[in-house]
Amino acid sequence: MSSLGAAALAAALALGGAGDPPSPLGAVAPDAPLPFPTAAFAPDGTLFVVWVDGPHVYVGRSRDLGKTFAETTPVTREAEPIDASGEARPKIAISAKGEVYVSYTRKGKQPFTGDIRFSRRLADGRFSPPVTINDDGLATGHRFDTLSVSPSGEVHLVWVDKRDLEKAQDSHRGYAGAALYEAVSVDGGRTFAANRKVKDEVCECCRIALAWDGDATEQDGRVAVAGERGAGG
Image: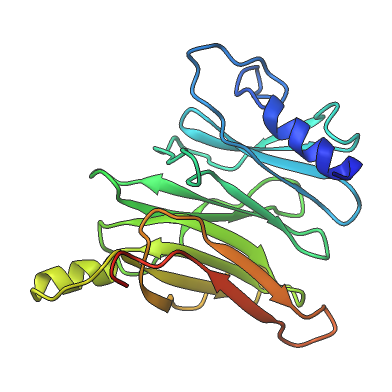
């Protein structure tokens, strides 16, 4: 493992959710909720870590490979029920220009339901008010998001979505698992295009992987999206 990779891992494992303000280096009480961190490096070597502290999402920034975090910034401005468990942790992605993006899942009122939320880092270091990305308006499962930036700077969000399962059940049709849906922004996360279905009948609780083929000189790099198939899919 490279020194940068080791620094990111060490910073992520050290996250505690304790401190005033919350700090990535805070101690974890034995019965405290886990912070479920995700780390990423900016092109200039700055380490960014996103994590959960109670009903809020925070981002920390370190210029010394995670030894200290001089800046901790809230992503959420109001308390939200954050879905933070295993793969349902907040995600962070950074463009080739150093633009920082965050996504997470806000829990719904019913079990296994939620909404995909998104925020971008502004020029003054604050984060924009989080917005909901799934556009179906249904109180169903929108979870396990994956966030990535293409070589040309497009922001891609892919998640597990149960809107088609709901429709199938309403019309008494069979449907295994859930679907993969995607939303894309071509203006640095200011707006997103309409949701687009990527694949039917995938696993409803598995990790999604994204990989890019191309570089920033290309108008559009090709993207590969991988997810587990649903039972019987």
